[in-house]
Image (tube, rainbow, N blue to C red; front, side, top):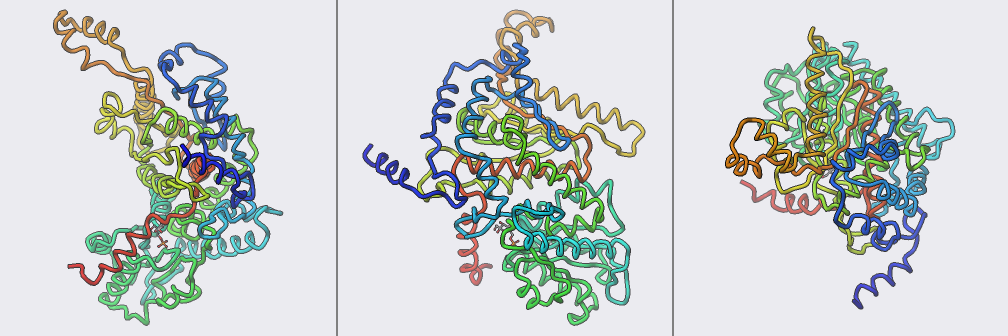
Length: 548
Ligand SMILES: O=P(O)(O)OC[C@H]1O[C@](O)(CO)[C@@H](O)[C@@H]1O
């Protein structure tokens, strides 16, 4: 008792946080948080009851639209008063002031003393940006450089050893230097792919590299070494092995210049490694790795989809940024994702969060968001260094929804975990098959069926009636009813993209970025450092000499 009041006293004297906004108040001490805790107390209405009530006010409040995306959150397990209390929480925490501080370039990544300005990467056309004209001009300059390189490669004007055109580009990078471009190339490549094939190697297992290199010709292959720090051992080993592969293929080290591009916040390290200055692209310490898709880290994507499409990706993200910054709290799509996630995590006690993608091109999306969310908000101390007293990031997982239905959805329906889901679907598709509409219909009906089944479930009475209708006798009905009953009451969002094009993919990714930001703000934690991964790296370096 004494201990906790001491902590409280120390906190109330705490200075304003790095954003220069409100002093940090632990979430449970906020009035809205306490109201939410009361509103979450059992008994709660079953989702089936909430949906059957067909309350137009609730339906209206829980539907959102931004940058062409729609969010249907009516299958979240909460009442209107709870939704209003969540909005009060956002207001009390001054989420918007914190966002503006980020936009201004305040050092909100306080443990590293850095600004966090991935939003500037999609705003290099803005006249008088809050992040200042120096940042804007630097972003613009580098954007032109890497889009120019991408266009040269796409035009076949970038020649390898012996004047051979480059036909294959291999991205060497890991984490944020891999997952974003990999996800986006897979999502957009099928409709925009240019002449050069783009490959990704992140894992330092020799097989991972060999599998990619095996069919390639050295004189037609270009490598991009992506590493913000340019110290990541995995990436540097891959690069060294690729350099040797080129040499073994007859291209001496001193002749390899056209085969290497590097992207880093430390150009001097890339040059010392051997990449010529003209082919070193820069990012900045204010770009977090997991938020860097929009920077030169997006080069493999730009090579795959071209300048115009890449600019559309930036435009979509910018449209979402504008929405996030200016839409009223109650209409704000990324904020809604964040608040509903907090409700599920902290008030309904759900430890995980599933992303179910109903478009095969989005197969890598869950892995990408997993890093963005878990590496950002996997924290257990507040920004003032005190231990958190509420749960933070859930475990984020997922994959392609249709496949998952035939794999792990059983647990969602009848297991002991309650797993909130984001269903993500694409309304129109243009895959060149004559019966594409039939494929699309199957995907969409399944998406909706799963959301409904998870929300409503089927109680024992309805199950018994269904079994009787199948012709089973009373004893069988009694025996099977518990096994064939669905608890339901599993909350979900449905996010629709009108099309999977660069603009809407950009908007979707930016929505999740802002969701993560809002949740960090609501929990009072730092989202933009990742010290947790450092210890393992240090120990690995120490052990390196002893490894078999
Ligand atoms: O781009 P780098 O510096 O090679 O880092 C790769 C990844 O490693 C991490 O630092 C984690 O170890 C991520 O945050 C980052 O995206």
